[in-house]
Amino acid sequence: MITRVDVDEAAARIAGRVRRTPVFEADAGTVPGQLWFKCEFMQHTGTFKARGAFNRVLAARERGELKDNVGIVVASGGNAGLANAYAAAQLGVPATVFVPETAPAVKVRKLKASGASVVQRGSEYAEAFEAALDYAAETGAVYCHAYDQAEIAAGAGTVGSELLEQLGEVDTVVVAVGGGGLMAGIAAAVEGHARVVGVEPDNAPTLYSALAAGEPVDVAVSGIAADSLGARQIGRIGFEVAVRTGVRTVLVSDDDIAAARSLLWEQYRIVVEHGAAAAFAAVNSGAYVPAAGERVAVILCGANTDPATV
Figure (cartoon, rainbow, N blue to C red):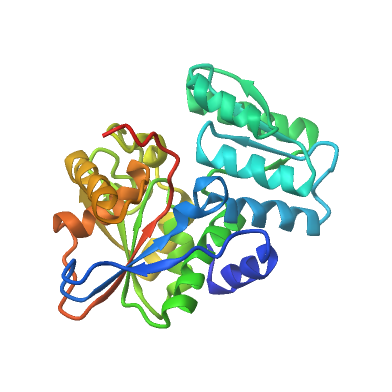
């Protein structure tokens, strides 16, 4: 469980290490009230995840847990792997990233280019995850979870506290949900100030299914946003914060996501990954309809994508 106190501590810890990403107002008439975009896709390594990565590694160093000759370990061939490898490089410690043997070659190349040692293990992410945990236990490397870790989620939450500083007042924050780290951090950051709407692809409904079941449950995952919103189960932290703060969840289709992503390019010349476009898709498709006068902020959380893809 995390609170605004954890987010504020994270903000102080990572100050000067991450970018303060801009906010701009959408064209008039996009929604009945006011709509802003928080441009977190402009963050280091292209996603919000650099915030949590820095918070996790710096906190571990403060506690004396970080061994400079061993560094950190993470299981992720995607955005979390890139962000944690970047944070480790900036702090001068090694990073070891475990990925499945089936990981796309382009992702492996990007991780190696970041300076990380890449270990391919198993045919599925679950096997790479277990191997990373074993490595942490054997070597003393600091394990950095992709989303379900208090310091990771609190660091991600600085997107929300920063947003409040920039806008002053906002009624609703709309954010995409995969494993739930970003959603949990933002919900903790804006608790008492704004509501949070979590947006999920209808073919990867981790939070939606967990709220219906009363606990995190496994779901089948597919679709165009699965590379970033493809967690098979909502994280425990994400679930607990969502329940505590009353996060509402809405579902969008692959067609909704693709349309929102195209519109962001056509109207604003913004290129984001499908997972980030999911948040805007909720508003653009009518899955979430703001009330008259409602002040809404949409988090555009990542841009690690091929602009040529539809």
